Length: 117
Image 1 (cartoon, one colour):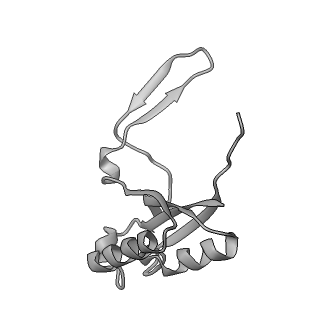
Image 2 (cartoon, rainbow, N blue to C red):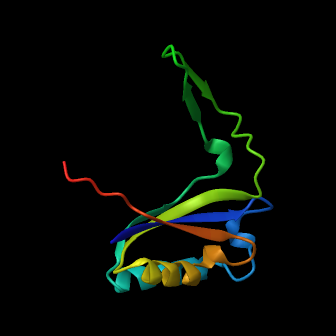
């Protein structure tokens, strides 16, 4: 079953500055999931300041902003992995190993919905 690991870092500073989450730790984790044969996809996201937000009103009018988002949050989505593992327990184990789960960060684990079309 596929699970998405949404990696949130503290909004206080870049993930690289978090204790226990060095660049080498990220490289090692990435190698582990690839070597285990469970890696489906994953990417680190560019800085939040590069984000563009699109909203569409009921009348179809779209609004695009580049000076947000403005949500009051203590965490910022920094990247994700999609892993193909046997069950939720295995996904939670891999999430706990992720450097993003340390130093005030968190990893949200969600099953990927697959539709037969």
